[in-house]
Image 1 (cartoon, rainbow, N blue to C red):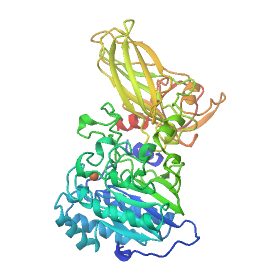
Image 2: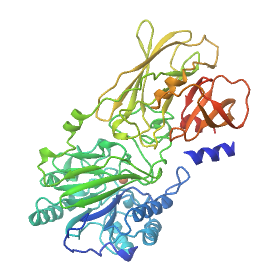
Image 3: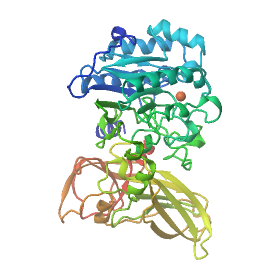
Image 4: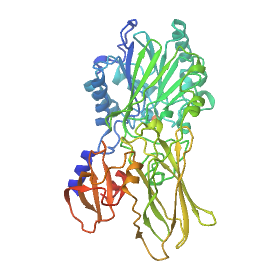
Length: 539
Ligand SMILES: [Fe+2]
């Protein structure tokens, strides 16, 4: 088992002190300014997915340095510690000193950084450790970088009003110099009504909200964190009166709370006390790279857990009028396409019990696939008794869009059904901007009462299976290398590299269990697909 697990894994400085700002004017070099942004590093918290927050932070700085040997700045947008202790502040600084190669390192306080001491005491602690103020303006290559800290540990802080007058003055001064050039503002929370995480935004009522300040200047570009939602969700960029982006988290990913997902092993695990955080939340560590030339801003998205960069970049020009912004929500809804299941896709039943089923379906993709912006964001599942059509159960399942490559299938279960009863299950893919594709449906009958768990065999043709994961059917006689093993009694093939990814097949035909490496003729045996999540659950 250990060997298999190993094989599976194989597959799958204050020297640039934060007050060392420069004000050299922009030259014709490209880009005019380049910087990295990350958030919610939570130094001092527990390891997730075998990776500590400290290791993740080190990797983030190293990744920035590998992309650009000396970025103009790296900004950490709050919650840089888990509990705000002096030891955690010092631990962050030690990693930054050793691994950051940026000319400027900027940080600001989030709610977690105010948990040990808050208000002026937290500011004093920050100044003692980092040698600069956590709320400040820094001018780099002629661009204004403004950090705005929270002053309390309230989850959706209400303390931003303390900086309102100062912020208004700074934005007015930058605007007076050049009304088109982007002004970069770094603040732990996004403002209510901007990006997708409504319940994780700054307090919308009262004086806590700075939206009224930002909206006066369409060239403002804010970078925030707090929500932890992976930047692989394209709704983490919002444009309206200005531009707001959310970086996700270096520590772990969470899910869109405005589209509440059903609890369970593959979605938000709210039943495990981790609301909005998927069970494998540690399998994500996001950051942004921002390249600016004149008034044109290009945002690159990277995930250091998966060592990938999302192929699509966000590009916008702050000299354009607001109505011409490319990421206006209305424009994106209009331009979006509904995700669709590939031809031949089918729901498979992994178990039929007297009180429910376990089911699996392939992911719906649009165009190609691995670009998160174009796939499904969630699936709506409905199970209805037949022929009455009475609703028996529903679920809303996440599409695991923060994983790269995205798992090719999703599995879930229900135990809310009656024995010996006919049902129809339907699965509808939902796109990021609300459009829904065509549903897959399957009729089935539950086992007789007392039958217990009945492992059902509903093999589907390999051609349909392959079509479901976006690869063409293979000619008869095609072989592939496979690692074959037994997991909880199921013969299983792990197929490496054939399609540029790893696919797992449960064998529904072999009678003889065996273990080893073999070459198999995949067209001669019927398989059902198994996701990585399901596989890992057996280990
Ligand atoms: Fe936070």
